[in-house]
Image 1 (cartoon, rainbow, N blue to C red):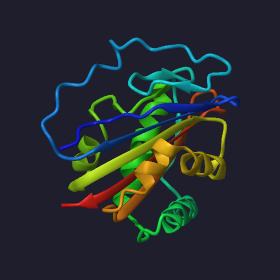
Image 2 (image 1 turned 30 degrees about the vertical axis):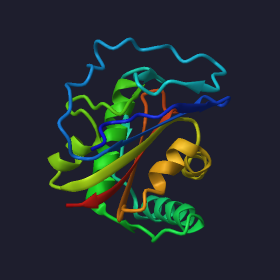
Image 3 (image 1 turned 180 degrees about the vertical axis):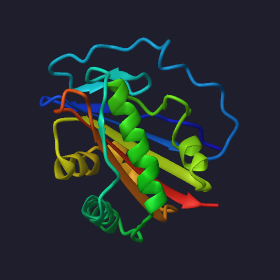
Image 4 (image 1 turned 180 degrees about the horizontal axis):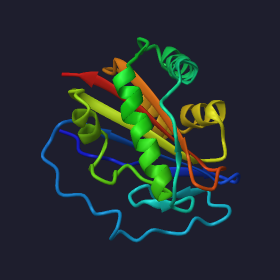
Length: 198
């Protein structure tokens, strides 16, 4: 079975970073702690960087964390399903519990100023979903951080091969989206979760 596989993060010149991972239930080695992992400073014009370690994108501090709005959820779902339609796949349906999983992780990243699949108290999206009562058979997560709004973020995920691969996993059935703004008031952290229940 597959384990956590973070993919390369795309960083556009506008200081925008992406990362992707897929999880299926399997025994996992303890993750490297974000507190002990080396956190690289984000250079001004990185084209590709490795997604296996947290990336400092903003200063840590009090983030603006809001639940996913119905409009955000609908726009995220429409863009995701357009990408799946291009691949000849069935559409996903929105799931409010997955919206919360994604929103909580976006908030956690924004508070720490780190773009990472590892949460403050969780190893990855599988653990986060289970903690909120969602039992995934398979789960994938795309994350982003930068100064793009929702449409730019969704377009970047669809254009990036590794992120598009998450969106177009054939077995997926449900979708959730979340965002939070870092303490600087400018850097937005995004998380999207794609899953199939047990």
